[in-house]
Length: 213
Image (cartoon, rainbow, N blue to C red):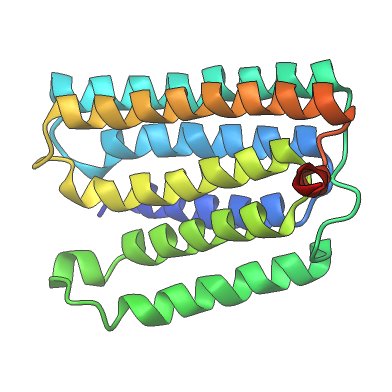
């Protein structure tokens, strides 16, 4: 692992804490976009030799995670006119503390996984696990649907980081399929956002409980 790659992994961990510690949805979108760009650069720096396969994966990741999806979420935020996550289930400071604890647990857990020395000694697995846990926290502790979409994106970023261990073994078609599935999921979530806002004039997912009546 190159020093630049390790730096990008540390950046991802810091961005996880920033996403957990801010209530401004626009700031969280930008944080996730920066994280997406960092993930897109990782395939270029993790290997000494570059080929067309790796370059295409990197460009597609930057375009999808760093530009297209954040732009879609920015537009959705403007359309529904919301700016902040006002009343999360868990406050911002406790969320950051939980994120820090999740990172520590991920580092400890990675040491017990059956990995070879090259993968087990680096930050790839701890960063992947910590990012998945951060996404799960955003999904479960935020009430606004857009914030939950962002949690899904962060969780998927963690899966992507783990997939870097298999970059040379995985065919390009599989990786492009993952990105396509992500885009389709965002479109579906966009439709859900529109329906929630139209029916309840709010993106607070607690309103969905009224459907039981």
